[in-house]
Amino acid sequence: MSGFNMRPNHKPGNPFSIDPVCGMKVDANQPPVQWVFQGQEYHFCSDVCKQLFQREPQKYTKVDAG
Image 1 (cartoon, rainbow, N blue to C red):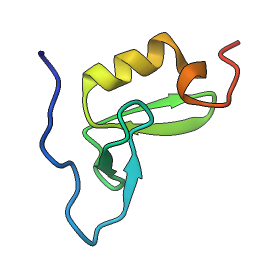
Image 2: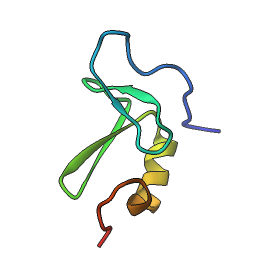
Image 3: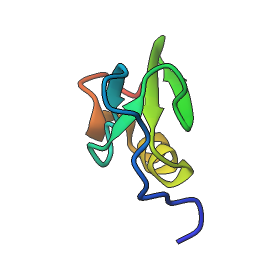
């Protein structure tokens, strides 16, 4: 699948965030992919996860897409 990366996206001991789509740990300082939705920044492991999030953000957050 193009754009999907299963390699770890953070180094042990560094701060991380969790990809809201797949649950993978992502380097919080240099995320591979990021996107802001309703003022909140989200970090993703890949473009695929970002695209899935963009299709149905309400599925991955408690924020209304409207």
